[in-house]
Structure formats: C-alpha cells, structure tokens
Length: 342
Ligand SMILES: Nc1nc2c(c(=O)[nH]1)N[C@H]1C(S)=C(S)[C@@H](COP(=O)(O)O)O[C@H]1N2
Ligand SMILES: [Mo]
Image (cartoon, rainbow, N blue to C red; front, top):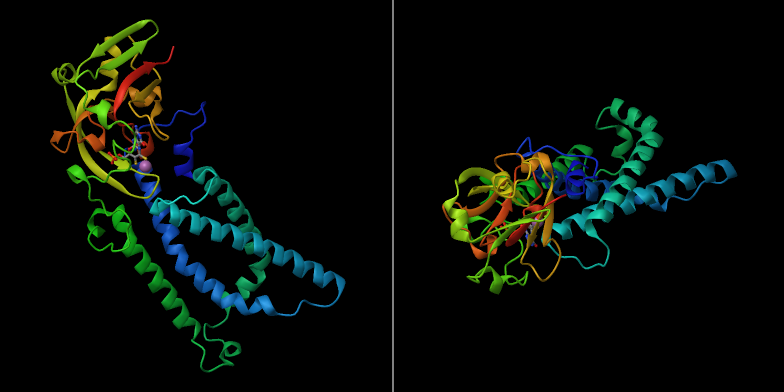
C-alpha cells in the first residue's frame, strides 16, 4: 500500500525524499512477500479443496450461513488469485489486458484485505480450536497414507523459501547469482538493467542530435544549456537506487547537476515544484513531476554520468533525472525541458 501511495501521491501530500531507500524497500518486500505467498496459497487450496464438495446443509438458517460463507470465500479466492497472477505477470513485464495494471492491482488488494478480514473473523473459533489442539490430532489420522500436517507445512514453507531465493536477486544484491527465476537479474549497460530503451521510446535519434539543449523555464524566463555547459557546472555524485514498479531495483553511482542549481539559473526558488519533460515520442512516462521538497534535496540530480562513465543512451543520455526515494518510473530519461510551476 505504501508503494501505491508513493506511485500515485495525492496532490495535497508532499512525500519526503528520506529515507533514501524507502520505496526500494517497500517495493522489494512487496515482490518478495507476493512470491512467497504463491506456494502457500496453493497448499492452502489443496488442503481445503475437498470441502468444496461437501453437501450443503439442510434447513433455511444453516443454508444461508453456509451460502454467505461460500460467497465470502469466493471473493477471497478471486481477489487472491488475481493479485498473485497479475503481480507475477507485472514482474515479467507482460500485460495481456486493457485495464491499468497498477490501479486495478491496488483496488483488488483492498477487496483481498477486506475478504481476508471477514474470513478470519468467521473462522476465528475454528482457528482457536485448531491452534489449541496437538498438531497430530487423531481426527486427522483416518487416512494413514495421507501426509501429516507437519509434512505439509514443511513442504509449503520450503517451496515458499525456494521461490523467494530464486526471485529475490532482482532486488537483493547478494542473491543476484542465485536467482535463476528472476526475470531481470540485471544485466544492462553500465551494470544497471534497462527498463525502456531509447529506440523503444522513439528518442534514439534526438538523444544524440548535437542540437540538443536543456531548456529551463520559469514564467517568462528561459535558459538553454548545451551538455558541455551542464558539465562545466559544479557536479555532485551520489549513490541512489532505481527501484522499478516491475519488481527489480539496483543502486548506482550518479553524477550530475543538482536540479535546485538549475532552478537558480532562472531565479526560481529551490523549493518549487517542477515538471521534467523528455524527448520521448512513444509510450507513457515521458514526463514527471518533482515536488518542491525533493527538488530542494541536493541529491536530486540532472544526471550526466552513471557508474563513472558517460550516461548510456538507454539510461537516458544526454541527461536524466535521479532523485532519492522515488519510484523508478518517475526517474525520467532523455530530459530536454525542466518547467518550474508558476
Ligand atoms: N522518458 C522515460 N523515462 C523513463 C522511462 C520511460 O519509459 N520513459 N521508464 C522509467 C522506468 S519504468 C524505470 S524503472 C527507469 C529505469 O531506468 P533505467 O532503464 O536507466 O534502469 O527509467 C524510468 N525513466
Ligand atoms: Mo519501472
């Protein structure tokens, strides 16, 4: 839910650039816990599956209670399946649907949370009874060939742990080489994965055009700078992560000009909200808004270099935004305009 809040922050709320790694952490936890939940859900379903075929009770009241319970379970199952399936497809970067993934994933999460609370409420007496009973209860031993509860639990946690180890490397550096299943273990130019390439954004020609200029505007004031002029300004270097909504994240070393220094050139206040625009001609996320308290942070850079070399074109050459505690999707690449809000 925090990841969603950072992705789509209401206008009246101004989130802090600190802690620097917060979005990376919530996003990583989100992906890891979702992955871990898949085997747990499957085992849970397997264990309750036979109950689906139990004859409904006779008698009006009992039938209504049973019916309501089944409806709430249907909502819980539907929501949970949707969450894990759509989340997995999002990590893979495959969107075989028309609706907005992010907004739907968030809305259905509330359905899942609500129906889970109802389900736990309804089952509380059963849960209490089961937790109080010895784990190898004789009632469960009527089929000697069936696995014991302990075996099933161990299997489930093992499968879940394995799923985490095999995917978490796209977020956790020391797991990188273990993560056979992670979709983007992170091989890209300059030791950083690429989300959308310059060609994919329709910016590959304009990005290398010698006529490129960075335009900074505030009201009727405009300043235009070449890349060499930007390089001649005082540079700052900071280690900041890219944390992608699609489930991978990575720290990198960025060098460039603090955005607030660029605002000073047009006489704008360092705490102004700004919109950064790019050369992008195809697809979404070609521009983004940076709120004043992020602009004011000296680590919010118009980056010109990455990991000690000139920014690769697929990482946003000639210039890209990088700011602390910011969803990757808003770290806009191929910037050519910075507009200060009036
Ligand atoms: N102009 C533009 N900038 C963009 C994007 C984009 O599609 N267009 N994708 C964003 C996304 S989703 C991520 S995760 C980061 C990834 O940066 P990288 O490709 O340099 O690792 O760039 C962001 N910047
Ligand atoms: Mo992203």
